[in-house]
Image 1 (cartoon, rainbow, N blue to C red):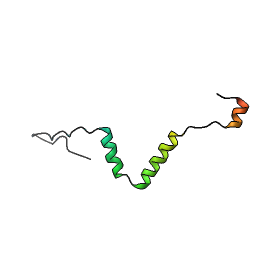
Image 2 (cartoon, rainbow, N blue to C red):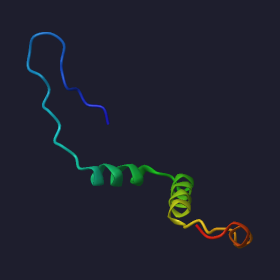
Image 3 (cartoon, rainbow, N blue to C red):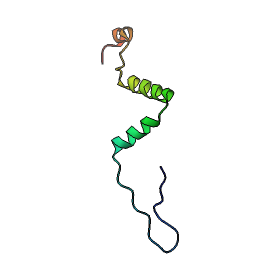
Image 4 (tube, rainbow, N blue to C red):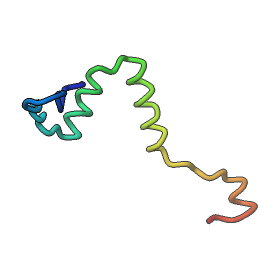
Amino acid sequence: QWSAVYRYGIGVDADKPEPVSSSSRLRKHRAKEDADAKERRLTKQNQLRRKIKRDPLIAAFYGER
């Protein structure tokens, strides 16, 4: 969310916002996420986690790596 850091002209600058941890930022972002975006994110995570298996026919011809 946007917040003022500096003000124009002579005067006191705005207060510096408190540091926010990455986990709390992620939690806040995911709370705003709709169902479709959540499903896309989970599908992508599951695909990245899945181990790619070598084709047995290709392995028979060219050998295991």
